[in-house]
Length: 168
Image (cartoon, rainbow, N blue to C red; front, top):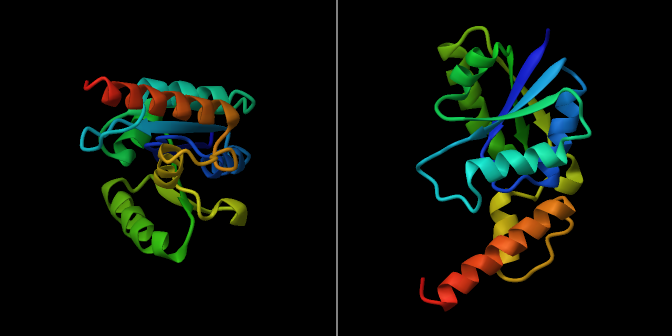
């Protein structure tokens, strides 16, 4: 069985992420989307919320499974018995970092190769960070994320603004 892991924080999942998930899933028997639990970052959504969002937006892809993990991506691959890591490249600036990571991962785990997917041009400028920034300032994010994700983002921002207004 050809199994791959697509790791990331997915805070939030974007249409660019979904594009890569759909394309990678078409090449393997099973694609595991690994939602990274990174204690060094303060995400907009909890790991559980991100996992649930991803399960929701990938429900139409039968060979996709979504799980959370912490630690090294290659360790997660080993745990999942996956032979491939999937990574997306938006611009040439991503390539240098991703190449270093792929080489490091290969040195840590010889049985795991990295598959690079170039992002579709209409999603090349989208990042989770940009989506959050546009949403925080009240901009329209409907071109960047699935509708149900946009709704959750706006709801979360509203909750945060209410806490700030109440001095919490």
